Figure: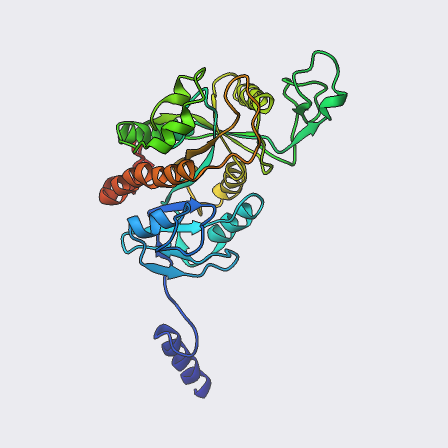
Length: 348
């Protein structure tokens, strides 16, 4: 009898949250915003990728997520934003978030919101591109350009291939290309294509030398364009040509290289790995990259790889929230609809 009363007492303590045991339910999340870095503080100073969301939404609540180095922020209306850190650390952070028992992510939409290098053939500094495809360029063979055979355009080619522009294999390394939900991407683009992105004399000066690239000379605009992910930072005309070819190769001609970044391939790889568990819905993923610098110099001119300028960075940080925020606002405002049905009208 005494043992019975002890069990009853323990049950009451646990139910009331006493006895040092927390029984808080996971916080339901409607939208996860993944940013990759911040400059200085989260508020009140020069903004990076995270700060426009913290201040602009706003995200008033802080929460530490085990395995994520930077404190996360969330709002009462179900928006959660993290700083994943860059390159390889991104995978760790996204996996830690998914495996955390602090949040219910089963119906969450994901927006990767970050800056990138932009191909001046396709878009300009400050422009925002919704990706249809994310292509991985990390599993690759690399031959010193001074040793490449005659006729090769560059020394980069697929694993298990013997020359450039031939598909190889990356078994055990990567899926190489991820196709985002077309209906969702089209919907996000249609919702934001007329968003006015600010121009400035500084941006105009940075665009001016790109006389051979009409799209690269346009004021910032919203478009659909695909992302190439590689943890190494690269720059130059020959590498841009390789990126254009690589995206075409792995998307079977359907994709257009637009943005180059260091994290998207890792994020999509982790999301795919956890999709079967039911913890996340892989269909509800969007990638939004904004141009902070050009991937090469003006046609016929050489340029050094460290080509970041304050005006380009500022414009790209601003564009992530101006464009991405429209989509997040629509999703949260009409959650009674989008919680159960994807925006393209397809029911779960």
